[in-house]
Amino acid sequence: MDVLSQFWATYGSVVQFALINMLLAISIYFTLYTGLLSLANAGFMAIGAYVSAVLTIHAGTPFIVNLLGGACVAMFIGLLLGLPVLRLRDVYLAIATLGFGEIVRIIAINFDNFTGATLLGGAEGLDRVPKLTTPEGLIVTLLILIVLLIQLPRSRAGRAMAAIRRDENVAATMGINVFRYKVLAFVLGAFVAGLAGGFSAHLTRFVGPNAFGFDTAVNILAYAVLGGTQFWAGPLVGAALLTILPEALRFLNEYRGIVNGIILMVAIVYLPHGLVNPQWFQRFRRTEAA
Image (tube, rainbow, N blue to C red; front, side, top):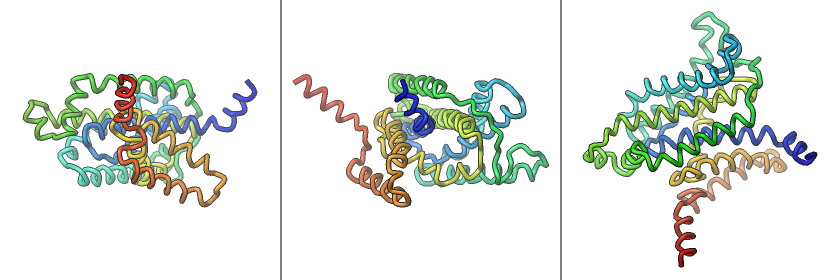
């Protein structure tokens, strides 16, 4: 018991950050599963973080209400954004959604100046956020989403999303409403990213606009790229590894960022399908059957 307590005292925050990053990995998995290269999730995370933190500080409503409130606002903004930008494809969609994240960051910095209120804290960020995030809450949320991901390929929506990813023109000829399912994937990703933002705000006790910039958007994408997008567990593995790796390499001091980058590059070059490749499981089953 003493060993567990000592481990949690040392690495508890890292574990919780890893769980939050897994939520972010799930948020981008929904869009990638549908063939959408979106970099808007950092912006949705910021919306969820700010809205839930403001509700906690000023409204005094229960944490679960604030958390879902932030996620729902992120989902609603995702719907408004998705209606125009999801008519774009590939790199054009990536650039448009990256621009959205920058707009959210700038609004957060200047919101108090525009409105004359003191809600978001400007460039200095919003502090005094109570620490309400718990490991149990993160684990339960993650398990619910994993069950949803497992059921996704078997559902009608999941099959439609997979068909759109393969070839949206063929999917359209099969009678699939391509645009509707793209919007569905986009708003689901926005909702989960908003949840992650709310958990993050109530773990760090601070929300700052610079925490949701270009670096965060790229990191979220890297979770999926490293872990792999062909199987739901891939992004989760990528998120856990990229969260733990900097801590494991802490002894390298200022060089750990270089080593972290090299490891990521090598993994992408030699494992183009990611660390979790469903073909390995198929081969293993064939071997067992033989």
